Image 1 (cartoon, rainbow, N blue to C red):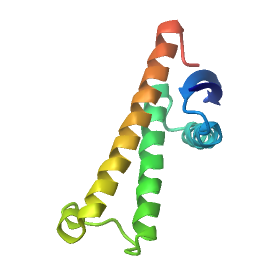
Image 2 (image 1 turned 60 degrees about the vertical axis):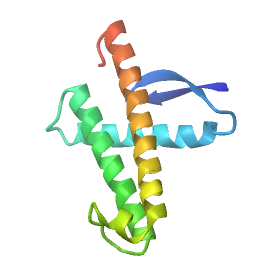
Image 3 (image 1 turned 45 degrees about the vertical axis):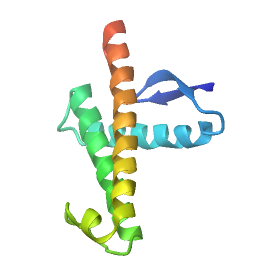
Image 4 (image 1 turned 60 degrees about the horizontal axis):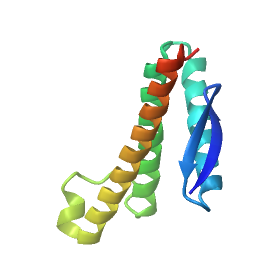
Length: 121
């Protein structure tokens, strides 16, 4: 395990990360930071928690859309399609969902840490 500090939405977060995954996590942090700044720049959402949730939703949507397109279908599959047509697709979807849940938990933990310390802005 190694430690990495990333900056997201003008805040620094120190994270424990598996050795060798530092660059990946830095790229992910940049994606989140860019998306949160884009949502804020839109001007309609002002609270940090709303910005974070909408950013996470947009990132998850784009990732799922790319995953679906790379699978050759071009659009999101019906909810029951993976299990019915391809048992391994169900495992992939579950792994993807687990990764998103883990990242969301990390973000939530980091945000809650900031809330305990003080304001997010």
